Image (cartoon, rainbow, N blue to C red; front, side, top):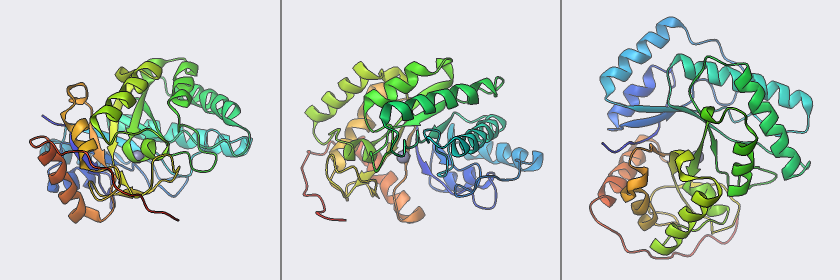
Length: 294
Ligand SMILES: [Zn+2]
């Protein structure tokens, strides 16, 4: 079975997410376990959790990951911000554990001018504390590759390597590869040759065994642009061929592939159809012109 799906809405409660995923024919989904723009949320009630498991069982979905709150910044040089973020991460981990999720996708954060090395040190020490304070939790924290906007950390494979090297309990960590972010960070995947070279680089620096989730997003912006804007599959400059490489790569057969593309369910359905179609027909790589501004 191919593990394929989308970031689905959990509005009205997490128990709705598997139903939304089922309607799209997903076998894997991503969700927010709480409002992604707020620091705190009421705990998941036992009733809501039970409804989630009932709906999940009926959905046929086999892999579920959460995405962490956008406000979190474990790399901040501001102690207060870092503490606040740490508590939010701990809450995310506990929620994920209650829902028995397969992972928590986590944005490594921004150094805010303190520099990459210092930012990574803050991220690592915060992650170690988060793990220490959640000893009974198992859902791995999946550090997501980023585009490198502003002072974002995680836009080079070396950043991710250094974070993984610094955490004490490696069993609690993995990596989420976002096709839009990595492309905009400078890692090309548009042709068979560039895809192969980028995956080899990932393997030698981070290790492909750490790759636990793939975000399947096209983008309008050029290679190395450091912009983070998602586009529907085949409508952007990455192009369909690249997504075909991921869909047909036997190394990633058991890695969930999740869309975070715009346009709501109507476009998710189209993008899922496109991705499934790529498993049967190979598309010739063509290089498109990126948008010039913005
Ligand atoms: Zn992503």
